[in-house]
Image (cartoon, rainbow, N blue to C red; front, side, top):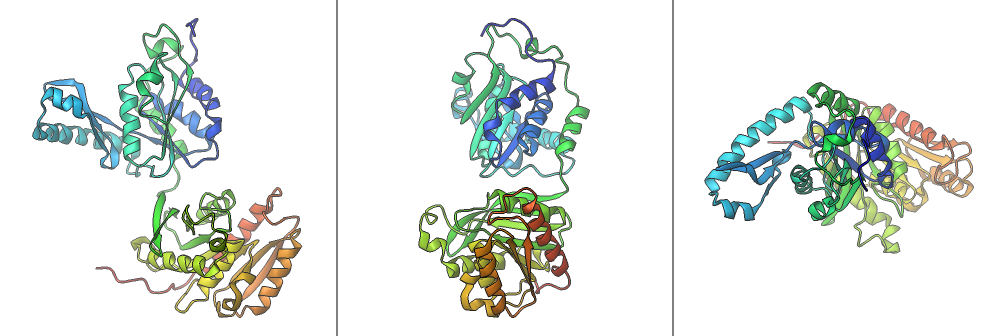
Length: 438
C-alpha cells in the first residue's frame, strides 16, 4: 500500500488495531512479550484483547569488540543466548573477547530487568505460543534477536506482531517467526515514527504502569514436565503466594491440561489460595488408544506417582493435598485415593464416573464430594450408587439445570464454588509428613 498519512494516533491506538488482527490466537496458551520501551503500551492492548499475560523481553546486543554497532549475537533473561557464528568468524572475535562482551552486557541486562520487574520472575515460555510485540519494525535486528531469544527460552510457536513495517519485512524475518502479523506495510518507509501522530518516547513510568496492570499475585504459574511410568507428561503448575494446599487434577477422556473447564475451576481455586497441578494423564501417542483412556488403574497409578513426587518439592512440603477429577478422571482420583499409604485430604468429582473405580471405592478415606448436573440423570444415578459403596465422609451436590459438561450459564461457576468450599474446609490441619531434604 502507498502511504497517504498517519495510521495510528499513538501506541495505544496501534495496539488496538494490531489486536484486531490477532483474534485467531484467543483461547490458546499465550504469553504476550513486549520489547521495552515502545513496544510495551502496544503489547498491553494486545494482551488485554487476547486475555493473555503480559511480559517483557529484555535483550542486549553483543557487539563485535572492534565494531560495537555490529551485532555478533544477543542475550536475554534466563541465560538465553544466541550467537551469529558468521559474524564472529568474519570479525575474528575470540572466545575470551565474546565472554568479556557478554559479561558486560549481562550486567546491564540484569540491571534493566530488575528495574522493570521489581524482583518478579520472567514468564515461563516453555510450550507456549509467544506473541512478540514492538511498536514497529525498521531494520528488524531487534525483532530478530527477540524472536531468537524467546525461542531459546522454549516457546513452542513464535508470532511476531507489529503495527507497521516495511513491505519486505516478511523476507527479512520469516525465518525467525512462525507467524508474522502487521497492520500496515507502507511504501516508501523511512522511519516508524512517521506513521504515528504521537510517537513521543515511552518513559519508564509508563512501562511500569502497563506491567502493573497485568501483574498477578507473587507466585508460580508455569508449564512443567512430570514423570510417571517412565513417560514424560506435560503439566501446568500454579502456586499462589502463601498457598495453603495443593489440588491435583485428573481430567476425563478426550481432555487434557488445557481443558477450559478444568482451567476455570483451577483459577477459582488459585484465587482462594490453593495451588493446582493440571497434567496430561496420557502421552500424545497414547491418547488415541481407547483402552488406555479407560484404564483406571493406569491413570490412577500415574496420578499417585505424580502426587508422590510433588511432595518432594520444597514449596509443597507439609501442605495438604487433594484430588479433583472430572468424568473418567474422577475414577482415577478415587482409585489413587484408595491406595495403601495415600493420604489426600479431600476428593472432588465433577460430572464424574466414580463407579469405574470399582472395589477401590470402599477403601477411600478422604472426604469426598460428588458434583453432578441436575439434567444429567444417568451420571447422577451412577454417583448415587457409588455413594453406597463409599465408607468415607461424603456428599452429593446437584447443580440445577446443568448437563454433563456444565456448559449452561452459571453452572460451571457453581460447581467450581462447591469444589473450592470443599477443599477449603478439608485442606486444613496437619498434612502427611514431608520428605526429608538435605
